[in-house]
Structure formats: C-alpha cells, structure tokens
Length: 143
Image (cartoon, rainbow, N blue to C red; front, top):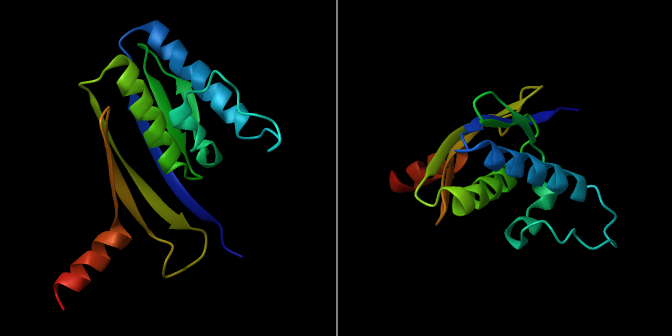
C-alpha cells in the first residue's frame, strides 16, 4: 500500500497582531469543526464561505514571529487553504494577494502520484493549476 502526500507551506503576513490572532482562532475553530458529528450543526462563528471546505481542512496554522502565520500540510487541503487565505484577504487586505506552490508525492513508485501545482489567491478570485492538467492541455494542443 502506498501513502500519498500533498505538501505546501505558505506564510501569511497579517498587518497587526489582532489579525494574526483572528486567523489563528478561526483556523482552530474550523479544524475542530471538521471533526464534529455530522448531525451537529456547524459552529455559527465560522464564516459561511469556509463551511463548504471544512472536510478539506487538512492543514495546520502556526504563529510565526512578526505577526506572520504559517499554513502548512503534508496531507493536502488545497481548497480549504485557498478559501481561508481568501477570507483573510477579504477581511484585512482586499488589495493583497498570496501565491504558493504545492507538491504531490508518494511513498512508492506510482505513475500518477507525482506532480504539483500553484495557486494565486486574491480577495476576488482563486486561480489554481496543477502539473497533471497542464500536461494534458499541452498534449491536446500538440495533437
């Protein structure tokens, strides 16, 4: 049996310590909510735009010096981290943007297990691409 990994690490620099604390508190609530019983309602203090990605909340959030926070994972969570970053940008830095890359890896040789992708997140949109899709597009355009 093979273990699959999707790894990323991105720093978000909130402008003030109160913004950093908000992000850490919200990430903690969302992480706890993804383990709740399905019959229990989602916590009311989680923004609606994050409710749809709670099942994908596979990343950790840590405080870093100078009010920054680190978002990182080896277990995926790309959709959730993009939505979380977008929420923070919308709330605190509507003109800002965050870019990051991720890698896909596997503990055993598998043809479909390696690659990666990138995301560009703003308050208005989330753009992602992955290398598998890019290769498919290139192959189609060269037929």
